[in-house]
Each structure stands twice: as C-alpha cells, then as structure tokens.
Image (cartoon, rainbow, N blue to C red; front, top):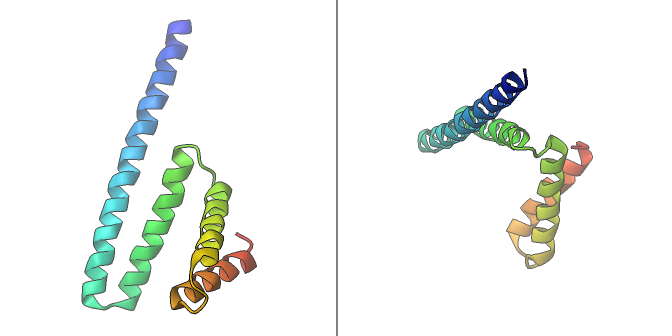
Length: 108
C-alpha cells in the first residue's frame, strides 16, 4: 500500500510540473499576442493580452507556491521602492505612484 501512495505522489509532482510548463507556454503565447496587438494598435486586443498575462502570472505563481496575496505584496513593495528611487520630476515615478495608489485603493 505504501508503494501506491508513493506512486500517487510521483504522479502529482509530474502533473504539477506539466501544469507549470503549460503556464510558461501560455505566458509566452500571451506576450506574443500582446506584441501583435501593439502592432495592430488595438486597445481591446492589447487589454485582452495584458489581462491574459496577468492571469497566467498569478496562476503560475500559485502553482509554484506563491500565493496571490504574496504576489500582490511583492508588486506593491517593488512599486514603493521604484517610486522612492525615481527622480521627483520623472513621469515614470508619477505612473508608478498612480499604480500603487490604484492597487492600495482596490485592496489587492
């Protein structure tokens, strides 16, 4: 009976690895779709591709043991660091700060 439990665990690990590979391929595909959408200058297609990339990243993170909450916390931490390290007059800093405010207001 112990052999069956070990075999089941091996199958779970193999299935998890296969899913991780599928998410990685899906991420590459979504980035390709984003590039195509940018060439077409289609806001709807760009939004769709960006949404796909974000969804896949969250699911990939979860699959490898990083919770949605942990991803959100890391995003906010990186934004805070980037805002603090950007020159005050930099438009990039304003965009980063705006995103940080948005994420904090949405309680993600």
